[in-house]
Image 1 (tube, one colour):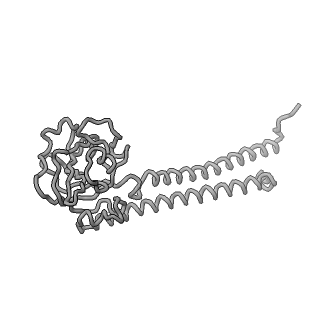
Image 2 (tube, one colour):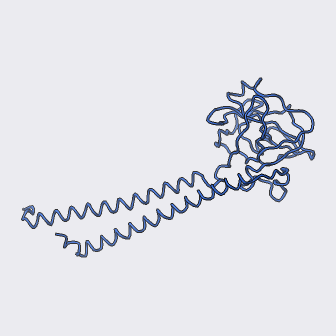
Image 3 (tube, helix red, strand yellow):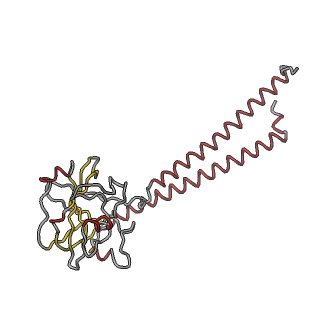
Length: 263
């Protein structure tokens, strides 16, 4: 009943199906390898960050040669010395911590050389309209802040928006947005999440930059492509088996003399 498998048509079709299955499995395995590489990169980055204990001045990490926050420096503990500019404190709405909606309290800190650092002193639940009694004002005089270096935000990440907010609020924490609000001599890239929050505020956890920690949307796209290619391979097997069964049933009908009579 299965002698038809030795016909040129079926031999060619079977070879083509085997090639298609092999290609789908190879592409699926390749995409799975890409996902595993990105996942491993994410784990290694997390281990490296957890192992980091040395606190360094911010100017030792953000130098003229490497002025931007990268995946190598994000989350690193830093110290910043200077004085808070409490007159220009900014509130950053639509920020989520522990699944709750709230806002950051960002106070510029002026360094001795005239530069400024965006220091997020903490997070509070609610909206900026609730900020009158949410947090104590920053201390006056010279201070040294210890915190974790964070990458500048991009629009659409972690609630960041382009603009359209009332005075005293900031939609996106990055150098360009800060320069538009406060014209200091210069801003350090990124921002610092203070390790110690004043009364009424909660410390802000370290945030990995979008696309920078290895476990990104692209990594999960790789996993999705893996599943797609394996599904394609299974579909080829299913279609080959279905055609095989149909041909076998037709051969059986012909053997029983049940061929349809053509006029």
